[in-house]
Image 1 (cartoon, rainbow, N blue to C red):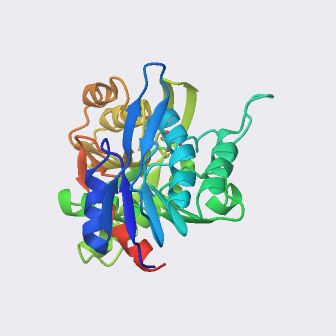
Image 2: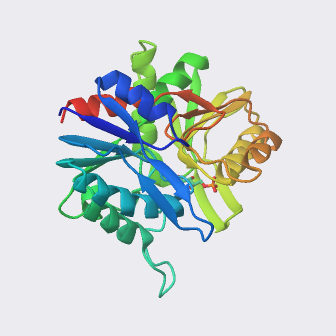
Image 3: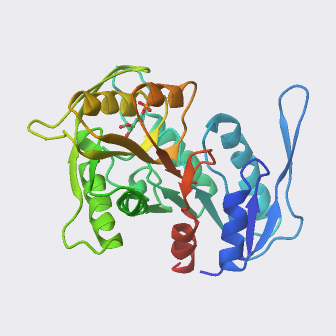
Length: 302
Ligand code: R5P
């Protein structure tokens, strides 16, 4: 697919800049003015044509959803024929069921909202543990799901000798397995890196219990905890504490989405985590791995 324009916002500039460079596309900015009453005014490039990508990751999502609600139809009015959302972090995916009667299933509603605005949505490791595909929540639109698991596995394999990859919950098993296979390929190993998954129980926003897989020998092992998203960091901190209690030599963390809200990094530090690596799907000081080549390949491939 030929991308004619990439539109970006100034608070998330590095990714779209690198993507425009990789694809040879024109990069332009969506200017924002915040009125005293909290409303936002957007200004887009006045002459658009062809295929237009809007790059908007949905970390701290609420104001950005309103921006997209305005920017997408405006881009079409200004000439965009096909509109693609590159949304490295797709928010609201974890509320995928009504756990208590009356709870809104945000995943479904946010998915439908975006499907109504864009022809195609490209995202990385959305939290679809109980949902078969992005198509299930974006009916009639093309949802392209990319995974950073391979990038995380390769990074772990190169950074740590003989790592044990550990996912914090059972739902992440296939994702962790693909990281282990990519890790082996990155260092020319014949077999996937050793990997396993814990069992997690969440008792509240900051209360998480993690149980290690039974019989897993951790004494002297270099553990790399991998996860799609770290928010409060409590899941990873609980897993790290368990690993150290079982005699792990080191515990590092590799995540796709570095939300790391509040004192998340402190919690990891207290739990004895050595390195924190993340992809640049969300701009963060821990970024060590770029997802831009993944996105560029997906867009080139149409
Ligand atoms: C949940 O299933 C995800 O994979 C993450 O483990 C979870 O969202 C992390 O949240 P927190 O960092 O707040 O524990």
